[in-house]
Length: 84
Length: 437
Image (tube, rainbow over all chains, first blue to last red; front, side, top):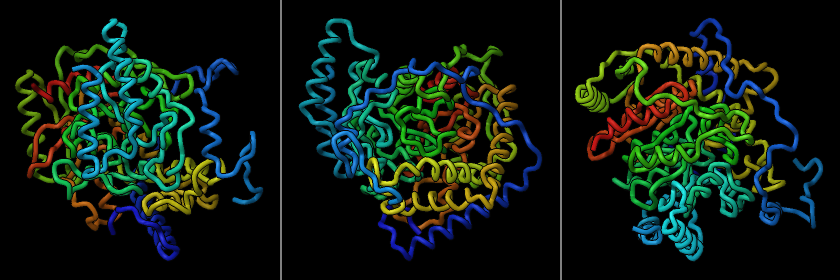
């Protein structure tokens, strides 16, 4: 196979899923070689709370944001309930 | 050269060459760019310009730049316009960096070759039949051919260093947490870092200094603690990574070894062989983490607030990671795949920490092999193995850099230098030595 982008057909879809599962199972088997546990390291500050409203969000361009939505009315994005 | 003159030079090159290498997906309107360049030049004349004044910059297509099409090189987001600036963009603009366009990349950063973009692969500036590497393919190529002075990329498993090596430019993966990820469309949030690419270490250093530092909007970010650039021991000890069982091309090994010997001898540095236990499992550790975190990150691409449903519009590699991630996060597996990978990740991280007690840096090639032809058939595992040497420093959260040190068959080859977390100053000092004149 090559890695060039192409539109994936329904037939190819299942093949991709099966291959992904195969790769993950192979990788998982190899990791079994490593025995034991270490405590997981923590990335971040020691104080991990902040006061509500104190950190300004980035300035959002409302027009651009609504421009991205497939369906909208004046001040809401419309999504079909259970459409997902 | 004024900013205006420089940007006109860059725009001229882009008009002539971008159609041949496909490094950039979008350029800002020329009138806007030229006006901004003039404003920057006025500031320079008044002595009031920021650190990046005069520098022309492009940004990878997964970093939000307000008003621009931040597609992640995917049909999923091909109509998505960023409604806000990422924190790194705000910092660049504050220092008068001139952002002119958006760079092509592997789709959603899920790649290592520059081939998976939905808008066509990026072509290697040295040999257009070859890959550029990825996923920051356009960023590296744009710097290499002179479309810009600097670029932003992102690096999760090697995505800055890999294309930097192949394109013959300098690329830095900062320590995890040293650069805010606010506004980066994530591939794998526990591994992603935004970083700079440029033709030389000085410019990489400059851009890193501007974008680094704690951001209240990214809880994993922190201030980089000040470290002295030179070794605490008063001399540099270079650790040479043991490459056994990693499948590295002998020609690449030889070139890197020669360079290490040359630079160490010139600077009076000592060298020492370094072994990172379980480094041969780096790829097997990395991909389950990425598959799971990417699956989680892509649930927002449901076509409701923006874009299209990812399962309907993505290419094969993105789909592989989404479907694979969906599979291994099923309740029946009880987190087995992810937890197993986290466990081995910690061992690799601890190995790096242990070694950094006795060496100042660890060096290796960036890539185990030379780039292949665009569209060449290789297996998934062979493709994933391209990142075997870069993935470990993402797993450990360390900083690492690719610096060009020679060529094989006319193709640039980079050396990777890795330092401990938040030792970017030391790393950049060592990188400058390898860069030479």
